[in-house]
Image 1: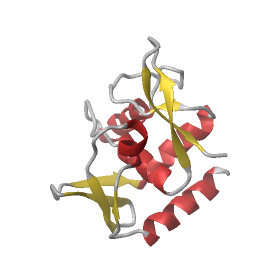
Image 2: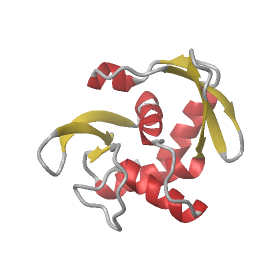
Image 3: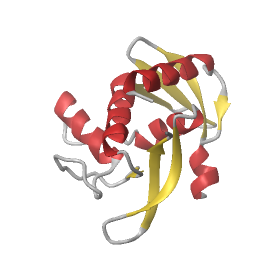
Image 4: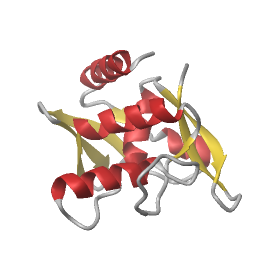
Length: 151
């Protein structure tokens, strides 16, 4: 699939699943405890997730999905989802999706750091059937969470 097809499929899936409750596929695949969530609302530029039972809301701007998809298309391989925030200027095996999104957000918003959004973006990519979770390795050979677009 190309970028436009992927974005259209994702947007269609998001709209058709508004107000539905989901369990994170990370919990099942990686064995990590996560919170249930629902797609609470959709605006022209963002979607808002609501976490259950806390009620906490998280805004995910559409540019983050666009950047994530471009990043995964460019890499063509399993990429680390990432939890650490580092700054690098090119995609490499040590560069994670979280690092990429953080770099873009800090440039756009002129702040030192950003909210972690990659895990939630990845959940929606996996739930919509666009991507799959896989294990990958860190720079030091440690097994870490990864994601890859489906062919």
